[in-house]
Length: 301
Image (tube, rainbow, N blue to C red):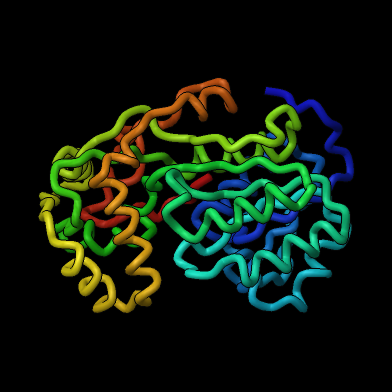
């Protein structure tokens, strides 16, 4: 798919650029738009250096909570990929002033990574600020990331061989961050999607018993599913060191899942990219096969 604008000398800031989603956005932009300059926004330059980004992708110190990092990060930038910490109970306090700074600098576009059913979590406030900013925008709303199982909050469960979550037999749709990164890179550059909120999902929902069987087959050991109560899940998360706000956010996601709000399938990925999303089976095969019960350490894009 070709974008409908010239990318010569364009500069894009990818916030959270070394994170599980942000680095896929950077890699996809590099692949699709080799002439653009990418500012990889983050707090740890050594982490950025280890990710093998191309010559046009350069680290810039960036922190939503440190406004002194904003001006330098936005210097020469036309477009921003904005990913906020979803567990922040008041994201509008830091992102509101940052979006105002983007408006002051006359940015052309902001692409926001939100979440499906955002109305029930604080991220919806960020959506509303961007929508009212006067800056062209696209909002992407994905469900659970497949990579939560290999790199995120459920990696511990896979390593321990037991997935404990409060969901019963309800199904969830999973999307790979590879697909999110590709979708984000396209809507950042192609203005035909401007002004839209697009739900991007995987190709089918699965319940956690099915998920456990698929992962077990590929990881080489039995992964068991155990349904727990929401209060038990919150305690488990906090015992692992997660903050109360993070535990509350994840519990809210599973509440939505129990109401079947996270099981929908959309054509968003296909509409944006022209191809179907990566299946969960393919994710599990690529990620867990031949890893002796652990998670893949091979580079990802």
